[in-house]
Length: 296
Image 1 (tube, rainbow, N blue to C red):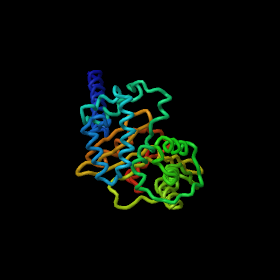
Image 2 (tube, rainbow, N blue to C red; image 1 turned 90 degrees about the vertical axis):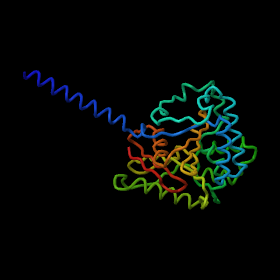
Image 3 (cartoon, one colour; image 1 turned 30 degrees about the vertical axis):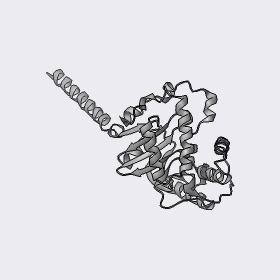
Image 4 (cartoon, helix red, strand yellow; image 1 turned 60 degrees about the horizontal axis):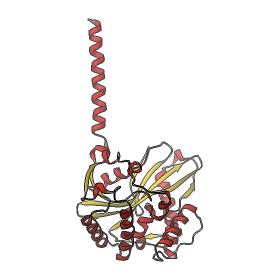
């Protein structure tokens, strides 16, 4: 009889934990976010995206230049992007995050990597007229300089020297000295340092623009300093009841437009694209305003 009660108890414990785990899975943020996306390879979506950009303060010359790269990428990677050729694809975030871009990439050769854009280059083409400044470059980062030099060389002089200085000032990683990272709010300190750095270069986001630059700031605190790197960028546009997000994940992956019901869903989408090691934090900026902080 005692053994029977013991087994019943153990069975109950197992059932309890199974229900707990199942509930955690079913109620996870990734299962709650339902959104639409497209690789900009459907004529109707492309035309609507073009109109969306023009109606939300992106100059036609910027849109035309950006669409040129979209079309070229899609021409070379038709098999890779065929999933959205019929239009918007609706998907839950947990299923989207299971897409293995590397395994389904269609014949992308390493040398082609240098001919396409990364997230910062793609975003900057669209938003470069929304950021003003007279920047004198004091700190340089070789990767960021290579990015803008490549963009200048392939844009047929549509990126000016002034644009290049703005790009470098906007995206160069910064370091700030601290006493003890445990005694400060690393988000506040990082945002303050970024704004001070941008102000030093007279870098300003123009007021009243409907399109906004999204920047994912990767914050790496240690005992003596904090390093802040712009790890990903995109363009956000609020149009009607939807939030649109336009991005290029990296030079190999497709251009993508997504639409979300609210900013919470957009933030969850962005954050889950990053792994969660314990040695850094993430902050999302819309222009120079914080819209999300993520503690690991």
